[in-house]
Each structure stands twice: as structure tokens, then as C-alpha cells.
Length: 354
Image (cartoon, rainbow, N blue to C red; front, top):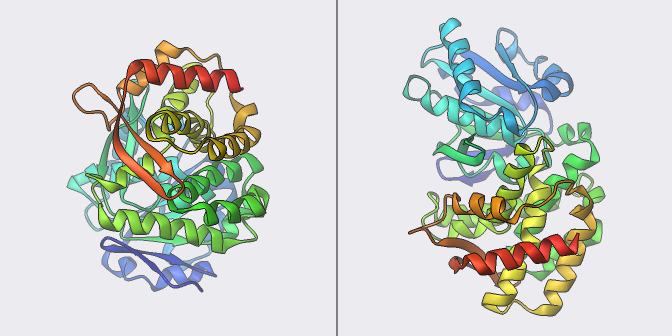
């Protein structure tokens, strides 16, 4: 078993068998267990969890799979279900699923009765390397991704790598994009290691998942509330979130990692123009990202709509477009001001590359 990683006041544990979950003290302190699942994790992952004694009497709450589930109506539905079950502050919410489940569940737990504890059990690559660690929770509002949310630490996170064997290739590819982002932030050697195995090799090389987690751990540890360096983890996300929101609006939702990968192409183009990111590295990285993810963009890109969505990004200050960009491998910068003209040029470049 891998040693636990510490994030703030909680730990992320790698468990070889799910029985190791039962050793955590939360089950003694919080005797009422609720498990939040989506339609996929109910079918493929929940049966394994229900073999444990601590889940025999758990309340199971199921929500539809997909990013569009992260909304206030669904929060209200879950809160009403908790009230109907008479869940009090002696309850613990277990989020069994990908990033949507942990984002939604962490937000719901933070607001219900002014806060009940929650545990994340990620079941996707994306959730393992990104969504379930770092204490961000949130929901979408008005078509803008994660515009409502809380910093809310879980009691613990448990990684059980066999859950990844249930994933379709597209989901693995989505998580791989976040790992590629971590590599851009940390250095060329990490990038080369990921490219060498490709997305199809991730499950067989869990040390690369751990390496990505350690990149995030090092950054979050310096800046847990995203006042400074943690903003660098948003590389690719400013434009990526706009692409994701626009795809949902058009009824052709794209996976989060796919949009982040395409967002990285556009934002590395901005990095080249503004910070001097080397052209040869830009060509190599963008060609690799477009080769893996370019075919998934099945929507007509409205530049004005995307620019408006970028204008609603959480990082913006004083109505300025604020980006996290890259000077070179391993040297990110945050709070980079980008004009509307530069943004539109980056989007034109992305559209022309597909």
C-alpha cells in the first residue's frame, strides 16, 4: 500500500482492499452513513462498497451521470432527501464517483445543517488526480461552470485503483489531460514520462498517478485558498471551462478533461505570444494534445459566446481577463492579463487547428 498524502487537514489514502476503509475513525464518530452515487457508479462501483459492514445500513442517493447534474435543483433534491431521512450532524456523506459527484457532494455537505463531514472515494482518473483533492467543491449556475462553491475539506480521500478498470477509454483520456497539465507545470521529464506510456498505459503505471497527485499536493500546500500560486493549476481551464459550458448549452456535452486539453492548446498559444513560451515546445505539445483530443470537439465555436463565458471566469479581476500561462516547462505564471483581442486570436487559432 502506498503511503498517505497529506492535503491541509486531511489525508489521501491508497487502499489495496476496500476493507481498509473501515479502519477510519469517522465511522465511529458519524454513525449515519449516506452514499452519493451517479447512475454509473451505482452499477459498477457501489456493489463492491456494499460488501463492507459500515455500509450495510447506508442511505444511497443516486443522481444522473453528467456535468449538467451539478445545479441548485439537484442540491435541493439531495438536501430534501437528507431531511426526509432525518440526517443530522452525526451523518457522513460518502461521494463515490468522479469529479461531478465529489464537486456536488462536497458542496451539499458543506451547506447542509451548516456542514456535515464527507469522504471522497474517486472512481475515475480525473477525480483521483484532480477533483477529489484540494478541497474545492462547486456547482454550475447560469451555464457557467463552478460559479457557486466552497473550499470544504473532506475527512479523507480513499483511492482504490481497481475502480479505474471499470472506465471507458474516453474517461481515462479525460483524466490523462489533467495529468498532462501537471506535467507542463512541473517539467519536461514528467511530460516525457506520460507521453511514453500514453493514456492507455496509465492504469498499468499507477506511479504516474501518484506523481501527478504530488504535483498538486506541493502547489495546494503553499496556497490552499487559491490566492496565489494555486492559480497555476488553472492552466487550460479558463478557455476549457468556456468550451465545456458552451458544449452543455448546445446539448453536446464534452468531458471536462477533453475541454481542458483543448483549452491548453489555446492558452499555450497565448503563453507563446505573451510570455515567450518556446515555439518548438508549443508545436510539439499542441500537436500531441490535438492528436488526442481534437476530434472530440463536435460543436461550432462561437467566439463571442466563448469570450463572454471567459469573462465570467472566477479568476478575473476588475473586468480584466486573467489567465495562468506558461513561460516554459515547469515555469508557470498566474494573474496574466489578456486582452479581448488576444483571447479572440487564441480562439481563432484553436478553431483553425481542428
